[in-house]
Image (cartoon, rainbow, N blue to C red):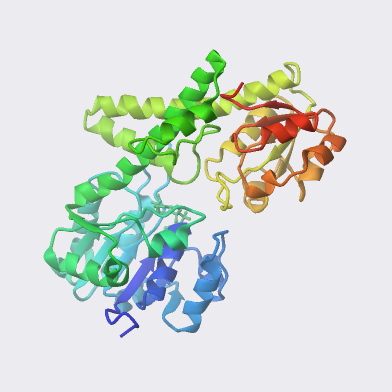
Length: 443
Ligand code: NAD
């Protein structure tokens, strides 16, 4: 028994951003945890106490739980089947070429695990999936498992935010339990006994609703961001200030200020692919109004990237060829090294395609960026990035960038022109230091 008196033997399949965090947090709640990934390097690193990505607070918690003996890693699905009573599916569900979700990792994980399920066990899906996936996985698992119908499956979508993953995993706003049996619900309540005891609400529902809750939440957040970004376009056209507008409407508690930040829009490994997969699922079922909504949200979002590229082009007089551009930030958001569908990298691509010489700085995401965009120039300081630049682009709102001394930076650029695409710098300070500043949506 762990310290919570409800300890279970849990496996976690897939140890990326979601799975590694989940495995560590499950162990920290007192459960015995065995985690597996097909990437042997990731497993080896994690077993040594190294987190292979940037996530504040995760590494000390990983080490603590390795030392306690509650958390272990393996490369063998036979070990996992033997060990676990509850198996969390945390593998990736990336975007397929047509925009729908690529479920091949999820199917492969169940194919690999099911032959080792020889007794009553519960699979729990955490990955983000199109509605209907859970029932297909359940049928697949039961057909291949020796334990047959003793294998059950629940859906327990994850809402963690990169950068706050540990806090969000240990103290989520709510826990969604998609189940088809009372037994599955009881087990999941045991898994989450510690957070539930603090009053965090658990919502029990069917598998389909649980699958939809996750994508609906992401669709709402994406819509909110695209909403404020079209307001930015309107403000720009009308000579108004979108930041003041966001503050004013955000104080209405029916609206709320969070996710109402105008700027470069959303990116990352979740929101963009999740709304596209949701659109594909809606199209398949003929829910055309949802297809229309999500198509618009996506187009508005991508339009922000085009707009910043256009502002950059006009800032250098219309021709980007041979122009030095400094890019501050390519992580899709601060406190993360994730560059999946990064708005910053997208803008680098657009500018490079027109012959601009792009130099990139990011506090933690440069190694990841260099792997996918080896052709860009990467430097270790803001100063090196800005050296002789004709435009400085602020593309990820790292707090480090709010501490930049604009007067010192003005000394080393070719022209003091700033585009604050994230609308978070102290524009007054930059202007006082002699900079020409463009902020989309602000006068
Ligand atoms: P990721 O790419 O970081 O991690 C996925 C991991 O699964 C990789 O380490 C990969 O090697 C492993 N994997 C792939 N196939 C496997 C298999 N057959 N067996 C074992 N391991 C396998 O992705 P992620 O960001 O952790 O996302 C995982 C899922 O969680 C996605 O569905 C995503 O939408 C969802 N999600 C992510 C977040 C987030 O903030 N990253 C938040 C909520 C939900």
